[in-house]
Image 1 (tube, one colour):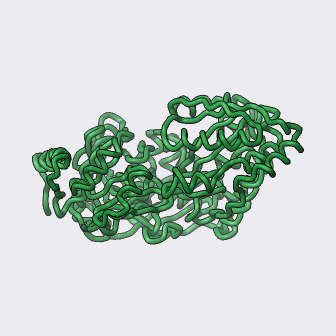
Image 2 (cartoon, rainbow, N blue to C red):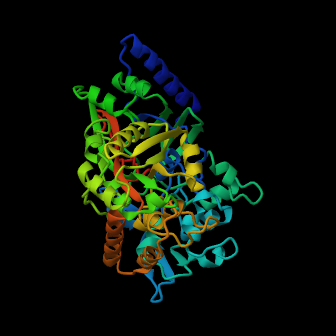
Image 3 (cartoon, rainbow, N blue to C red):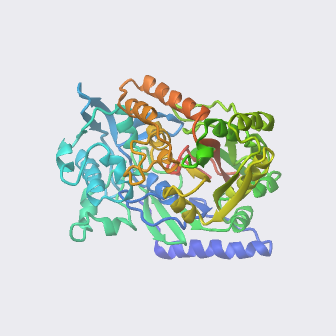
Length: 534
């Protein structure tokens, strides 16, 4: 068993920093042969406790540190497979799932992971009630009942009781999210303070049975991981992973080109074009489930007109944007569930057609157009997308006033339903189409003081029938039919309504040519490190 000392870590990070400076003078750097060094913007991390993690970078890290109860085949993310659990059974009434835990999974301490650890992990998510807890509380679990609803009658059996006969695939898909991570109960409780179930310690440490464990996390600086020698699939190919916070894409490119980083995660489309001839670098592109959309608030009578909504669909230059400033990093996608996942709709029937849009506007009684304010974040790619929309809308007489602000301000206004039009994105919380259908095709209460504030609600879109269909899909036990139900829902929203899906993101990681086996996966928390070699 090897160990990496804090002195080693410091030397490595300092070395990389010096190497970056050396790059300016043309001196070639190099990373250690047993260590993967990544340059990435990781300033979004606020916690590494799987009961709390809800940010992109934190989710990625805990995916490599914890085994989740269920997971996806890293070679085919449409295939749901066992993680810490190896099999499951569903009761006839659909209200009880019994999972058998996989034997031989060990924590770094050498202690074997049990069903008791899994039950403890799910219970603490509900009891701590941090932001992602809703993924589990939607099963009807509360602080008061979770210890009766989630039990481990023996070391190999995990029993989950739910209050509605949800589709089993939905429940299992939720267990693939970060809150389905199995925490070493003994280790967590050893560090517990009061009744926090180890929360304060797990914010900056780890107690998982995944391929790596956390050695250190320094906010806005670095995360260092060390291989778990007891990982059930065999020790990771590389002994450690160092993720350096490098906010500037230009600095990331410099580190990568000089060999001081093995992978850069945030290069721009222009930078990737510029390195196209560099045989020492390889661009890895994988579609993510993140989608980007334009929406209008139907409180505005003009924007509530279905003819106007249809016209707007034909006034977006989807393909033009994809081929220019979005090239390689976004593709045209016009349905709410991302391509590459089970239940996705890949049809893209809309393109820029100003003549058709003008005819629809005339039918709607606004042949001369109208004026609309569009709220847009001032971070890429939104300003460029907004200017394209402004230009093409103008070709049909629609005057667009762009209202640029920080993303937080845009979202706050949007959540208050005070916008006319908005450009935003969506990323699912877990890889089940309900995660997204729930927000786009469901609005159980359209009143201003509603508790459930979905994207449909934000745009004041009252859709009782679609809401019923979405609820029904959630209870469909036949997984094939259920995926078909989501395709039907997507087609309905694609053709009508105030939400126009425009793009799906392609994440691009640029690696040194000797780096192999790095997996991005379809979601923010499906990145896999342990198969990486160099």
